[in-house]
Image 1 (cartoon, one colour):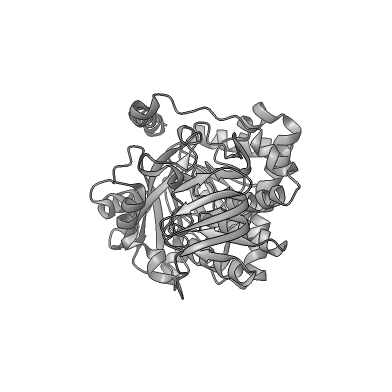
Image 2: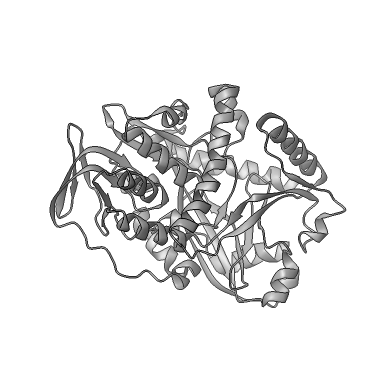
Length: 437
C-alpha cells in the first residue's frame, strides 16, 4: 500500500487532528499555472520556504498531495530541540570544525525562528519552553554529561546538568538516572503551528493547492511539473515532500530515493490528567526524551494530557494493537498512570538517512531544482531553518545552503529488495544494546 494511503489510516485517531481546526480548504490545481518558484510539499519545510520567498517578492505556487500538515509536520511528537538527529561528530568529520560550529549555530537559529514566527504571525500553537534529556543508567548518565561538557566547550552552548540526587525533582519516574535541561528548546502543537504557517504564507501571497500531487518533473528552464489535472511552469522548484517524493515505487527524483528510508513512528495521548496530576509528573512541563538509540519521548499537552511516543517500525508495518502497546511503554515510565486510559493513538512515516544527517542539495541534472529531505525524526525546528536557507539560495545567496549540501550521503545497503530487512536487523541490535544498558 502507498505510504500516503497508510498514513491516512494511521492518522485517523490523531490527537492533533482532533484539536486543530483547519478552516477553509485550498482547492486542487485545475489547468496551468506559472510562478517564479514551485514548492512541492505542504509541510513545515515547504511552507517555510514558500513564506520566505513570497516575503522577498517572488511568485510562489505550493503543491500538496493531501492537505497541509498531512505528513510528519502535522503529527510528530511536538518537540523542538537543539542540534541534529546525528551527533555533531558526524558533521565535524565531513565539514571540519568551523563549518560544524556554523551548522550548530543554524540549529539554534531554527529555534529562535520558530518562536519569532509564532509571535509575528500570532500562531496559537501552545508553545512551551524547556527540554529534558534524560539518561536511563549511570553509564549513559556519564556519557550525557560528557556530551554536554563538549557542547559547552566546543560550541558555546550551555546546558544545565541534573545529577542523580536532583532528577526526582524534575520527573516523577524512577526510570531515569540523571539528565540535562535546555531552556531554549521546547514543545508545541505541531499541526496548529503548521496550519498557522500556512495561513501566514497565504497572507504573503503564496498560492496553495491541496490534493494536488506532483506526478512528473521535467527539468529545464523553466522546470515543468505535471499534476493529475494541471501543469506548473517555474524558474525554480523546491522538492520538500520528504519520504513521499519516493512513494509506491515512483519518485520525482529517483537519484535521491536510495539515500532515505521510511520509518514508522507512533504516538499515544492519554485522557486528561488534570493540572495538579500533570504538574506532578513533569514539574517544569518540559519536553522529555531519553538518550537510548531507540528512544522514548513524551510531554504534557496544553489540556493536561500526557503525549507519549516511542514505538518505531523499520519495516513500514504498523504495530498490532497500537494503543495497547503504547500504553505499556507509558507505564514503564509512569506506573502511577495505570488508571489512565489512552484516548488517541496514531503514527506515520518519517525519512531517515544512513548517517542521520539532513540531506539538502540540487538535482544532479537540474541545478534549478533544490531538495530538502532526511530530517531523520529531528525536523520540527530544523525544517523552518531549511526552508529559509533554501529560499536564500533560490534568491541568489546559497552560502548557508551549500554548507549542508556538502554533506555526503551513501545509499542504504542492500538495494531495493534487501535494504529494509537489513535495517530491521540493525535496529534490533540497537534495541538489544539499549535493553542491556
